[in-house]
Image (cartoon, rainbow, N blue to C red):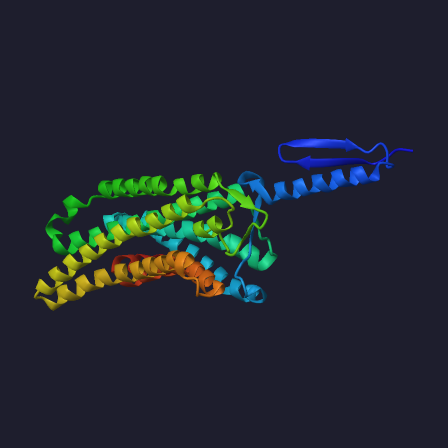
Amino acid sequence: MSLPVLVLVSVGCVHVWVLSQLCAGNLYIAELDHCFSHLMVASNLTPSGLSTFIFNGVPGLEAAHNWISVPVSMSYIISLLGNFTVLFVVGKEQTLHKPMFLLLCMLSLTDIGMSICVAPKALCIFWFRSKGITVDGCLTQMCFLNVVIAMQSAVLVTMALDSYVAICDPLRYATILTNARIAKLGLVGLIRAVLLILPMPLLLQRLPFCANRIISHTYCEHIAVVKISCGDTRVNRTYGLVITLVTFGLELTLIGLSYGLIIRSILRISFKKAHGKALNTCTAHNCVMLMSYTPYLFTALTHRFGQGIAAHVHILLANLYLLVPPMLNPVIYGVNTKELREKVGKYTCRM
């Protein structure tokens, strides 16, 4: 009569024990208890490459996930339609091939990237309860999303420079900001974003993750992933905080300086018509910057220091930051930019 074969898998190797006799039961039971204890400890701490993360959606509001999915899906659809419309119209119209509209196309590309990176997975969580993601997939999403955010920030700084030159030095605008120069600035911004963000997933890859791999979020936010690691995360936390404060702080300073000089120039203009045109140029940029920077800094800092804020409030704001601006940016620029508004109206009437 054949006896059972017990296969025990431990970290790095496979042990096959054949129990040929049951008469020495006490000895074998003791050995089995020791082996299972060893396996439990090993499985509790595994390399990040062998694990899978589980998204928790919006903690505390699991019953309302279907309702939450409605504004998420609507903002996603509107964002794609609006930004692809901007890209299509600017691409088709030769008269719009100017630095300002080239920057607007860059902004639309970053908006599309943010929406595609976040919304589909969030909707899978809300609709199909598909909450799993591999570590490689999570790190890829994190890297791509943060590169897009950093790139968008660089575009906003360049747009502030564009506004400054257009208002403060309009006679030299055509020579200072050419299409080729804007394209080069965009490439520099992309390279800078990649170099700044790439260390984040690389530093996370070296960390071990515990058995509890539940991420209380709808996407792989950097600090949310760091929090579920069992290793020493001081380097990861410090690097993330430095990137947030130094990089975005420097960009906000440059933007503030640009608009300070713009306001000074506007106050010196004596013609009311020129006053209104200059202010109208700045209004759209200011709205976009407020929508982009304020929620980002809030979510980045509260994830680290806002212990008293409810988890679902933080998660909802983090999602709004990534979904609402991409939806509203084309609308804001479409309303405030006469040339773009007219061209969009022309193509809309043809349909």
